[in-house]
Image (tube, rainbow, N blue to C red; front, side):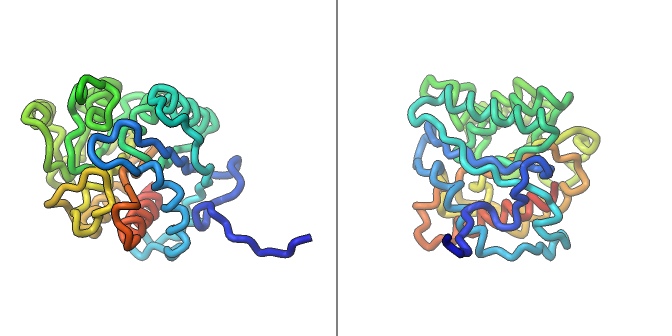
Length: 278
């Protein structure tokens, strides 16, 4: 008999018992509608490997990962080239997580994976709100004739939860019509007080990593200059600890565009800190 020990490719400090966990980490390696640089489907696996370079303790939240009580379910095996079936598989698995009384923490993959998550979570929480970190508005109705696009994901999510329940942080790129949508529905946030209306609502937090500046996060599909620092993003997470976060995801790392591995390391720490906020 082999004696080991053997390397574990699950997230560091995860609870191996699904039934006893409060949060389920779900890898969603899908990038079928990326409009510029593909490759985010490789992110979940690389993030898991990089997690072992982190400390378990967050001094910002004064918590350890074991305090979060999350289970890493691994990556879904999605059918390449079939967008609708991939989204269906994500939706079905997220529904199962909530049937079991748990919360999802999704790791993408491109941003379209948030849509089936919201479709599932909204069945279990009335008046669900979304807090959206991103460089881009993602409010198009379609992209090149395709409604199912990462460029349209928040617009489609707004049709489920209502535009009044959408708040967006870090946005700096989009069509004139999308900026008009944000103006009409007052979705764009500039400081903490802009989130006060969501304090008593169940909240899903979705983080597109290109909300961070390209100097910090070059390894993403659609890099956009002028973004926030890691400390700025983490200050939002610290503020959100007082909210009722019922689900979250972190998306759009494309690890192969940053061969230094720094973008993957940043993504991994973003995930650790957002887990602490839940």
